Length: 74
Image (cartoon, rainbow, N blue to C red; front, side, top):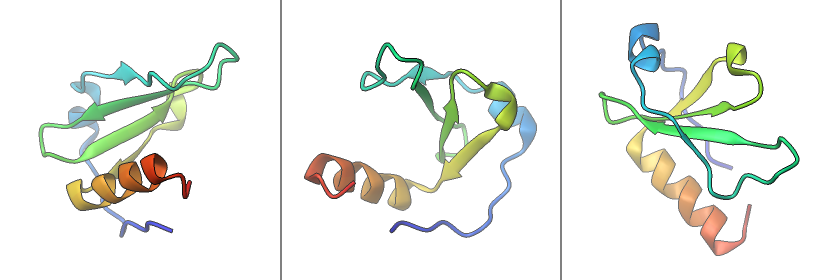
């Protein structure tokens, strides 16, 4: 499991983010969006309920997550 210590990204950074819908999102509304923030952190949010906010990850944690998904362990 990949854990990230509590880190608050300024709300203004999330508001200015350029979000992209995941290419792995299906047609069943199970969609997520990803953004690389100005700080270099990565953010992920639920497309259908953006009011829930976003989870953010540092570059190392993001690389580990992507490697785990590509390797089939997630």
